[in-house]
Length: 321
Image 1 (cartoon, rainbow, N blue to C red):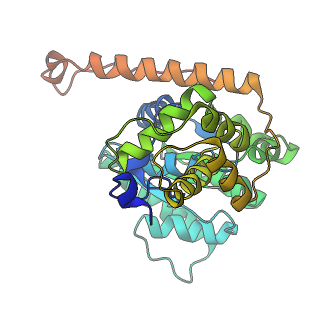
Image 2 (image 1 turned 180 degrees about the vertical axis):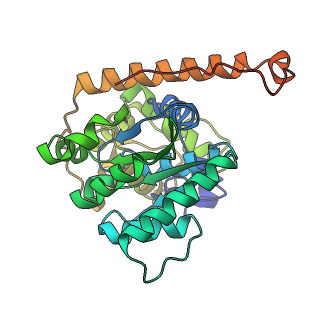
């Protein structure tokens, strides 16, 4: 409705994940780079946590697009799978027809297929969205799949995306074996007031806007307070604020437009409290892996690429917990 009014090609604040609108600020770019490096070069299960609406699914979708060609992905969007259903889903992702087979046979066929992929130089990663809702038995089955290996090499990599409830679930005594295999932990930070304006204008320009900043300081302050920095809430408020400004036939977003959006959305302003220690550890880990990834890519010189194929080349290793 308001697209022509603001010179937009498409809606800038829809809540459906569209990767062209991926915002790399607020530690998301660092986490993405660290994930790509970890999946490509490092063993160990990876966990990415974040509040509802913090952009986990968007990050997962971008990761699917950015991984190198030799890495094949299996994306589990439905977390409420039983143990058997999860095995069927992974077998299907590997192109196996296992209809009517017993669980033991399915596991063996999955292992055989993973070994075949390893011989072809392929690496398989399972991305689990909304992992906090996955039943404990299914999570345990994932751990057993992760244990599959040939020689000293793991056959499967796993990335868990979930809300903070995933941390609570993993702290349960029956989950300790899975938790011990998680080598990297990342937490998605909320948008700060300083990054909020950059985020809003990034989305506007990605949707075709070419004008000046339209969000007033008071509007930004109110969006930040009401949204608690969560992207989904920010998108809802910004979208409805644009509509309110369109109705007034103005191009500037003021606090009154955000208030109208708040009323229409029935969003409360209760703050969400984040674990500062967890955020710090996550940020340090992401920056460390990002640095190692940059070094790894720079280290692949033309001289190394022309070395005899039979020579032994050292690969970088990462030890983190």
